[in-house]
Length: 590
Image (cartoon, rainbow, N blue to C red; front, side, top):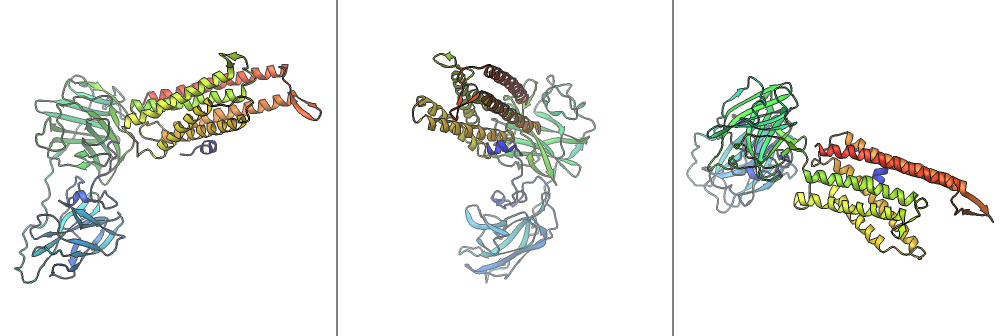
């Protein structure tokens, strides 16, 4: 994000797919056992790639050169198995070119598989296979090859190599895994509607009370229960995918998720599950029935039926319980989904979608993060800014005593203590929300910690302020000013970075303009007051024995000058509060 020179100087769902093709770095150990990319697509038949070996016999300890070649492909997984293709991988591999291939540890056997290192196109891979001392009589090489996300071949059979003087290997009739049969999918003839929401349907809508039949921008999710199953309807504007998930908490991970993915003007409905803050793992479509979809005017709609309970089936939640519900959307390319385009919509509380029909909404930004942002804006855009102006320009204006000290000092101290208190409260909220450190927020939390440290040091420094005529007073003055200025500059930079984080989900680009407006308003006010102070001092200077002395009496010019300063401060505070109110209102409506 571009910011002014003064400022710089001064989920879920996270959605890629755990698979051979969708791990550009080739770390595909999850696919070691079945060698099947979890893309939710049907493997292709008639593989164009083939495996060749340097020799057809081997002895324990020997190295056999293995080559995988064919038309250009992006990803692969190569293993050696026993003659029946059962059990763990056999032996280990040695790389020939570590730029294009890497070793994997499959089923606790180091180097027992080879995969790609990047999604770049490749036509040939060469490695050495190391025969173990306990090798079986026959070894068969297998490869899974991915051309692109929705085009791949599973367990391409290679040659069988044998130890000397053993009975010949008989090739089984079927060498390629059978392709799964997908449940039938039909087309929806008309749009969903919200007429039964809260009556027969449990509905989640954004904006609240929108109707997908009448509003193209309406994001809609409904659940209609019958005896043993639930009919699900999902609708929203999307050019890639729509998804929702049931979750035990407001965090992405260990969730039961469902996706509707656009590919070649067809919508694929896919159950999946989430493991941590990672990409969804596609599951079998067998639990889903009555699948249907519709595309019209940039709106994707899909529906399916699933049982309320699935005894013994992993990753499918029991819908008799209550869950938080996430809704997300994002881009898709050839059926491959990418990170959601904005922070998912999350319900405010847990709900039982098979219980009493309700009509609810959600938020793209959670309450604790909203409060965090609001408190930081109040502290570093209002209270600290006003406090700095008072200390810099209003010492001669408000000299009257207030509770034992000059009025300007008491107001300045109150505003700075308020700034520190608000900063401390706001600082704690993300840790409470996350339950620890956020490793996904870039530089924002690191700079926030620096701001908090400087705020505390300022308080300690002020507590040990030397007396007015103490020799250390000048050092205190410059240290106090330098540390405070650094804190303000870093705080502004931190807020610029924080506004781009998905947790707050502020709409752009107005958020950038608003922050620039805050900064420009304050800098402009300081410049006006600096110019005015300089002009006033020039009027009040007199020459006495070639020295410039500042008049101590309150002249008419000074009185007019003080009135001007008060007017500027009043205008500044009103403008600042107006900008602040607009910003807080935007945060509250997320």
